Length: 275
Image 1 (tube, helix red, strand yellow):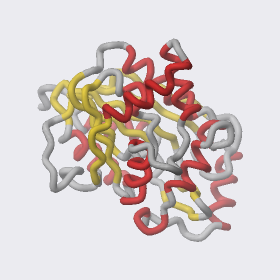
Image 2 (cartoon, rainbow, N blue to C red; image 1 turned 60 degrees about the vertical axis):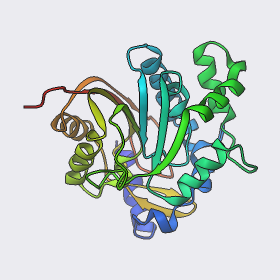
Image 3 (tube, rainbow, N blue to C red; image 1 turned 90 degrees about the vertical axis):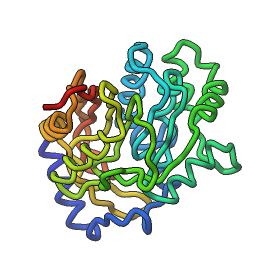
Image 4 (cartoon, rainbow, N blue to C red; image 1 turned 135 degrees about the horizontal axis):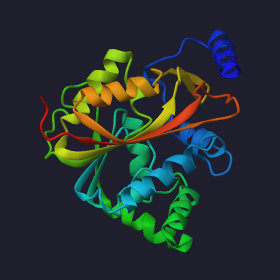
């Protein structure tokens, strides 16, 4: 942990003050290239992608978590969260706060020229499912299943305002809360706001990184609200959920674009009766 603490101090002293203005400064293409490029992206090299993809596969392949509607909160410009979920839900709704992330995601869904290449990630999930060569079919299924891309702000009581949707069977969110929330109170509020989109008895599937206070994209530094195991447990429980599974994984080598120390995956269920 000393190495991570030292790195955090060095980076925060040398970089400009982190920003929270994603709409103005965030570049989805730079993010995808720096974090998700096959073999060279940070999430490939630090183990996050394999960690999250394996856990998503095991969760949705179990057959217990399925239904008509899944809402992905804070999809960003990424499609990896949909790869296993699309096998268990009739409809997936992607959401994000920034216009540019939604536009980048739409490029891939519409197979537009210049869209980011997710094929290696798709092949990995297909390999988990038993046949790596079915990746083209998998991409087609994701494109059929993701019906809409909506504006989302977890800091609003209704994160999808002004739309009011039928309650979802499952909420999925990855790497969202630490970017969207300014402090611990914001984490508690965001969890309650997200919960309002889910049916009683529905499932919450969460993944992300632990302890991050900042990360860089395209030379810009962005603020993160650091999430830790105890904060996540309290926020999820106080929002009316029972935690069914919680998995963490530490990373062993310091990283250069952020200061997180590990990854987490959580499966929870919304209680039917909240006293």
